Image (cartoon, rainbow, N blue to C red):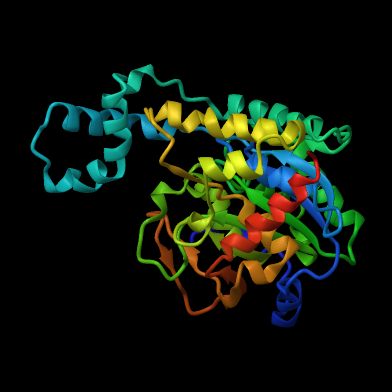
Amino acid sequence: MTVPIEILNKFPKLSNDQLLLNLSNPIGKSKLIIDTDTANEIDDQFALAWALLSEDKIDLLGVTAEPYSFQHHKEELLKAYKIIKEKKEISDNNIELVNNYKDWVNGLIDSNKHPDDIYFDSPAEGVEKSYQEIIKIFNKLKMPHEGRVFRGSDQYLTSFDEPLVTESSEFIVKTCLQYPNEKIYVCAIGCLTNIASALLMAPKIINNLVVVWTSGFPTYSVNNNTNSLNLVQDVLSSQLLFECGVAHVYLPGYNVGAQLTLSLPDMKEFVNGRGDIGNYLYELYTNNPLHKQRGVIDQTWRTWVIWDVINIAWMIEPSWVPSHIVSSPVLNDELFWKRENESYPMREAFGVNRDAIFHDFFVKIDKLK
């Protein structure tokens, strides 16, 4: 247990039957909030556009902006760069560090860049950029955004006693209370700051809140979750999700969501020329901010993982993201999964039908030609 017991005691204790009902696959048209760090790379834009084009399955109540920042990489990136650039002997203590940053460092060296040349957005800058990017996606689809887009936290959770009250956390609470007899899904495609704050502000929302989150490794994995941006930015919020008792659908990024790749030929054939949104997604793909950050010069032969569409895929057709019920683990302070004797059920994905997922997206966006 990593969350203090006095915090956990504030949450209602749902029966296993109620949790399993909340964790059952969505049927028909579901009420959904998307919680997203939209500007940190390019996949959130695909997910949001697909959700907006799927009104037969998704009643999108609102979109909440999450903070993001890559600042936590700076110190280790500098250290790895120095070791690799100067061809120093790699000690046992630095093997993992060098392996984690090797491709990034080599890209910077090939493009004649130094880590100090990279500007890393602060969380406050990240949330504002995400807010503006969400509005841009609505505009590209010629859909009204007024009253549907909300600014989130400009920092991460630092205490379970101090939730961060923002437009986004208040909207999540308000929505759950407004529809007490319906499941309110929140597709979390960023860190969990807004959602954790909402849970701490009004613990009773676990009665009908279902969090659908993509991040990290499968919970049976022995790997450390440090490399997961969604998880590592706000560790307290990540830990709260797994211990507070809220219904939780976990969609691992590594090994599962990582299969959702698109190539440049895919983008040219199926996305470019499909209205303003298709052209914009193509522009993002061919001007990927993470390519620039990591010194990627030639992208013609590469694919890119469009991780975050996995959440929307599960909402539209759960069979495209096969999953099962498992016992919820604890995320310890060292960012490993640990299972304790007393736990509660959660749903976890173990695969994806990549072709079916992207076919549905391509068919919907093709109608915008």
